Figure: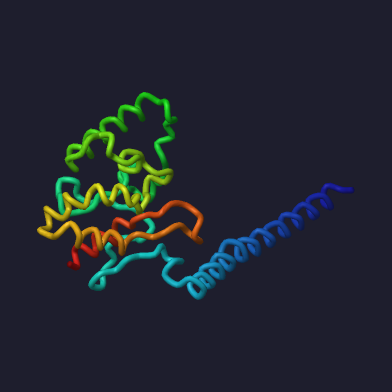
Length: 197
């Protein structure tokens, strides 16, 4: 085979490879994601866009991504701690193991802080009040942590504890499919209910 034939064959193979690259990019990089997005819009509208929550025409958060509420303001329910300051672009846990001294110190510090804010003994503070979730963006807390915060929030807002407990019950979801996960309280939904009175 001559050098010219090898060069021609190489050029043909390169052209074929380039065509395959363009076709696969169009199919898998444009068409497939567009079809998946469109199906998501039809099958589960709202969920395909991150379950954004709107009030008065503006987005105030997401039903599935936690956010920070002012800790110094006693009138809000507080969510789980975040390992990344609720940064949605840096969703991750701390990657510290359960026996890591830094994690243990952070948990002790958070437990004492929550106990002080809520006016309870440190032993009464639930685990989700002092540990970040795997994503660092958990939108929900346990019913136990929500119940712990009821007296503080009720007093700060001038509401009865029973009225605030009722709001907590309305924001509580059971186990998925009846058996997966744990009951949970969506913090954003609960705080919006408080804001709406």
